[in-house]
Length: 197
Image (cartoon, rainbow, N blue to C red; front, side, top):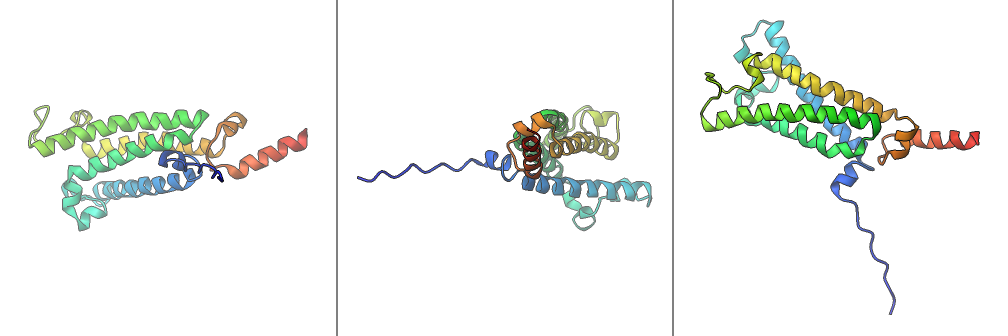
C-alpha cells in the first residue's frame, strides 16, 4: 500500500492576515480609517469654516443619506470594526510597534464603550445621566463632534506610530517578525550581515 503524505493544513485567517497578507490587511484597514477621517474632517469644515449648523453638518455620506449619520448603529458599527481590526492585526506587530498598536487598541476599546452606551440609549429609547438625548460619559463634558475628533486622533496617532515602527524594525524586531511587510528589508539585512562576516 502506498502511503500518501499528510496534507499540510493551511493557516487560519488570523495567521494569514498576520503573516503573508499582513501588509494587504493593514492597507485595507488604513483605507477604512482614512475614509472615516475624511467624513469627520468634512463635518468639522462644515461647522467651523462654512458655519453650517451642527445638525446639518453631516459629512459627505450624511448629505446624501442623513438617516445614516443619525443612526447610532453606523457609529457603533465603525467603533466595533476598528476594535476588531486592531485586535486581529495585533499579532503581526512585534517590539515597539506592538506596544504602540496596543495603546491604540486600549483607547479604541474605551471609545467602543462610549459608542455602546450611545447605542443602548438610542435602541432602548432612554437616556442616561439626565440628558435630553443619548449621551456618552465624556460627552457630559465635551461636545460630541469635538469629542469624537479627539477620540479618533488619540487612536490614530499611536496606530500610525506603530505602522511606522513596524515598517522600520530594529534587528531584534526584524528577527521576531512573522509577516512579509518588511521582506525586502529582511533580505537586505541578511545580505549585509553575511557580507560583514
